[in-house]
Length: 113
Length: 115
Image 1 (cartoon, rainbow over the protein chains, first blue to last red):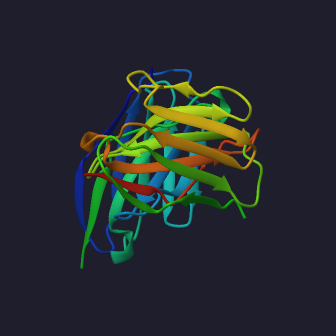
Image 2 (tube, each protein chain N blue to C red; image 1 turned 90 degrees about the horizontal axis):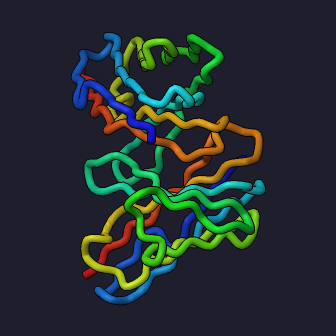
């Protein structure tokens, strides 16, 4: 089955700086890579996603890059703000989203004021 | 749009009893629903995938006789934890997907505590 590795487990950055979280996956059949933000006790919130036919996608301060050859994808958050503090999860699935998601272990992002 | 609800949000039950959790898609028809479990400070782990009218597909290591999943309609899936034990205490989250769409819409989760 799919295995998703995520690094780092904790990331502390100064407010206004950029944050980068990296993930690798093992199954070359995976073709959908979403990123979620989760606050304590709440549901995961989709912040951006990318499909395997695209190398990069951007939405305001958030961007995701995908390298299919190396089987890794990254989340980039620029101009970080205190409200960006949360746990972020990467995930992967195959079958055009028909299959369930395999999640990384999560990154606790801390924005220092 | 694309709202998924879960009921109950929290439940406490005694060891040995069964608990049923409902997952509903409120404004769309969900061809596929997924059930995930999340232990404190850990990631989400897929338990099973259910398609309307079909038997659920369980992930390796998930006991299908313990975690009964029913997906009787395009808007409702239920997860029943049978003979619950304290180690079943967890946050159970469902998600729903529309045929042809990649995105999964998550429910708010159910916090199960088994005493």
